[in-house]
Image: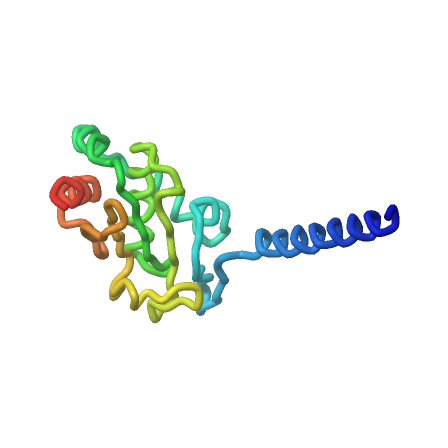
Length: 177
């Protein structure tokens, strides 16, 4: 009886060890890849804001983030309309529009206290493709494209650049779903 329990404990511990090793492999894997194109490094896949801040080829992110100052009156109105709102952002680290609009949009999200659990960012290659996600399922033709969802349903999008300002376009979409 004692040996059987010891043997079962060994199998049980060994199973946990395999699971832990498997999960640690998943955690350490990047969810994006780097592609070298001419003298530029392009990020492709799911990225985080930390990836943008820390990558040596994305200095534009911090510079443009710090430059953007949203309209405070519009921001107050936005805060009232945020429940149930989530975002999917498609961009390209090679794209001048993404380099301008993405940092500004994330600045807005931060000022509205919207955490990274409410948005996903996907960077695409020069053909606007990715091996990590199929942008065609979302009808992505231009980058950046910001998809706005309320309670799981798309209610609008901002494509390439805002019609007015990012915060005003966002307010109009959220206020009139």
